[in-house]
Length: 199
Image (cartoon, rainbow, N blue to C red; front, side, top):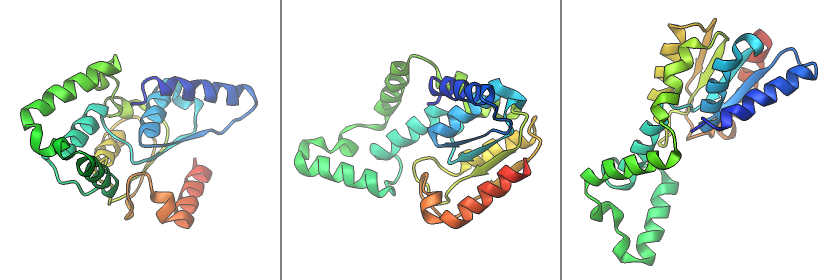
């Protein structure tokens, strides 16, 4: 969920700085966006900005959302998840997980999954630190993302605006999870380049 990975981002920035880089903008997608935010909180103005595609507010919210989709409490509108579940149930009809696992067990599975991580995602959630990041942030999210709802990015942007960030930019085009470049490559490059040039 970005907690361990953000240490690599911090180290990469320090190496770049030691090798003469003066202007550094961190770009992260999904979990990489969480890593970027956690790193940016520690780095402060050592970096010039952040570009965040399809970020999430809290890892546990994403885990719960995925479980609810997998076990029948939310519609499966993600074609990859739908195909995976169909293949599993075609191969073994006893694996009708959506029918076999009642909703109360989703909470248990959610808790077990989070305990396996070895840390609390709530304690290291981007939503809890984004208002402390003092650099410009470019938030983008595909409106067709069914893995991380777009509301996560909107909540993060509002929190950043009310906090230390010097500027918040947003872009919400039609695309699936982490597919903005694939769907809008020219506009993606133009917008990210313009953001980089402006910070």
